[in-house]
Image (cartoon, rainbow, N blue to C red):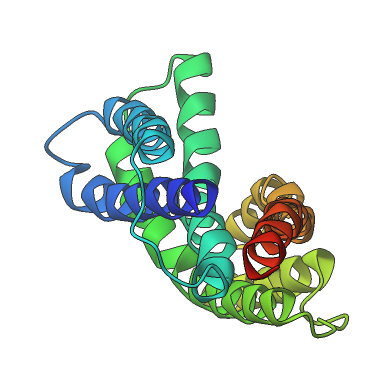
Length: 202
């Protein structure tokens, strides 16, 4: 439960941070906001692992525990790579404009990809086949196609979406293994508990 809460908390911080970034890009240096977002997400993850979560059915948090962090990474990681490139090249002029422009060019692809990620998480949590469309590369492909809708006249933004979107694919692939590890932990906990109940009944 702590593992799942930690992922949800950190993913939620990333999503909230993305909103703050777009709203405050013209007021505070975007690179500073990005750094604060990742630091806050890491802090939330550590704190959530130390807090004793309220006892609920673990299955209720399975989908959210992989969907929320994946959505948070989708919202923040590509733009983080853009801003790191700006910082590495020493180009500070136009960063605020780029942040707002990226919101326009990536809004549709973020929505489409986000919906597909949520569907993938629900199917993985339920143990049902995801199919090609909801595979990591299937989601990536639909995301790039969605980016063409506002950016078809501007091939450069589409190319950037395609390149930076590659960084999200490993996190989509990790969703399945993370849930598999969670299930293994639950099974290890359930066996001793079942034995204890058997001894009490005997």
